[in-house]
Image 1: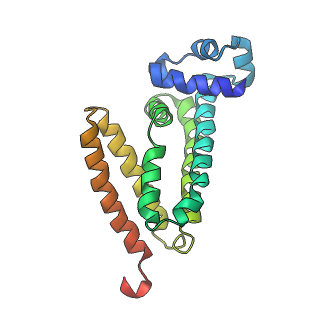
Image 2: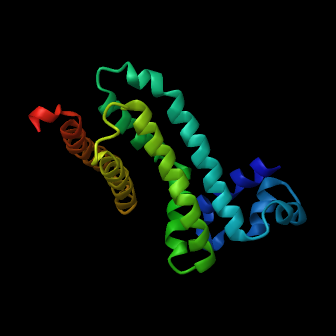
Length: 193
C-alpha cells in the first residue's frame, strides 16, 4: 500500500504540479482510502517527500547495478556522466523540481526537503566514490560531482521552455565534454597537475 501511495504521489506531482497534488487525489489514484493514506503519511509534505526519498533509493539501486559495467568501460567517466543524465530523465526529476520550487514558499515542505535532498545527493556521491575510488579522495572530487549534477539539472530545467530534443542533446553533448575535462584534471597524476 505504501508503494502504491508513493508511486501515485509522483504521478500526481508530474500531472498536476505540487499545488494540484492533494492527499485525496493521491489516495484515489492509489486506490486506497483517505484514512489509509493518513495512517501512512499524516501530512502532504510527509507524503511527497517520502515519495521522492523512495524514488531516490530506487534510482540509486539502478545506478549501483551499473557499477561493474562502468568500471570495465573504456570510458568510465563519460559513461557515468551519461548514466547521471539518464537518471535525471523522466517523472522522478520532474516531481523533484516541483518540490524544490514549492519549498521556496512552503516552510514545512522546505524543512522536509532539507532532510531529503542530502540523502538523494549523497547516494550519487557514494556511487561516484565506488566507481572512482582511487580519485575520490581528491579535495575537488565532491565539487566535481556536485558540478556535474548542477549542470544536468540546469540543462533539463531550461529545456522545458523549448522542448527541442535536438537542442537538448546538443547542450548535453557540449556539457558532457566540458565535464570530462573537469574529471580528467582530477584524475591526472599529481606530477602532471
